Length: 334
Image (cartoon, rainbow, N blue to C red; front, top):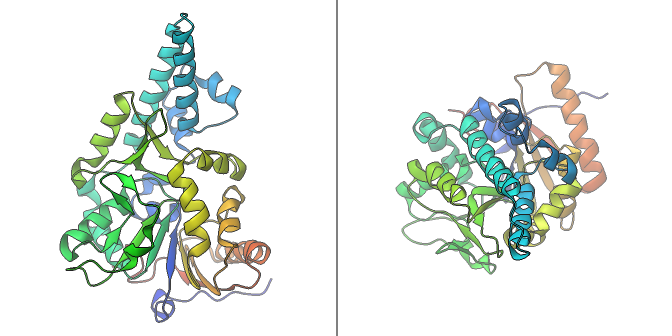
């Protein structure tokens, strides 16, 4: 295989970029505990799904949201028929508790990652559009910190908790901010919740209290999180279609990322093929992809060729270059 050059971020950032896509590597760079395979595997390893493993298996999923909805609907049907089931109620409670405990076990507290958040916010502010495939709160916290110092620079298209589908006008800076960055979550976020009639809302409170507030909402039994973290590409698309917010991002945001795209911390795994499919509707002319240089050189080169192969299938007209994810000034690097 031909050797592929891996540039520094300083060289790549000399050009203008219209958007950045963040993958799980961006979260892992801030906290190593995010390097778990799936939330389901965390919950299973901790014995939090003692009686509900068969439900996940029967539905053919490891997606908590899918199982929570199934249990809730089953509970409502039984009540309507006059045959309430304590087993179903207990299953719903177990899955909900397992999700809350799994999230808490892997998610850092705000104070422990504040310095990383400051750097990540400054880095992300250079892009007109940010799309994050991560559902954790690190990017959200980084946005809040940056906005506190610079005005409403980052905008996620939610107003009073409701998603604005006509978000294009938000690209205009809102003084005192001198710029604007729109942020979207194609796979959802812990901060977005849905009730059981389908209404979706953003949970917004002070940064340090956000994780506790979110899990308290889940504990109430009235909300389930809107995020997609598990499963194949096909299963993820099915989950996306269950959400008004995710569908809008998938159909309206990903195909409009502009002529140049930076990708940081994304593996180009086949389980996310739907993301490339959406981007391919209006492909960028050039794309810069981060490479984790903490691995052996052979692994780095293999990853670069994997990216070129995936891009060749889905984005054949896009010129691809690579940069070191640990470069100074890149994401959370000093």
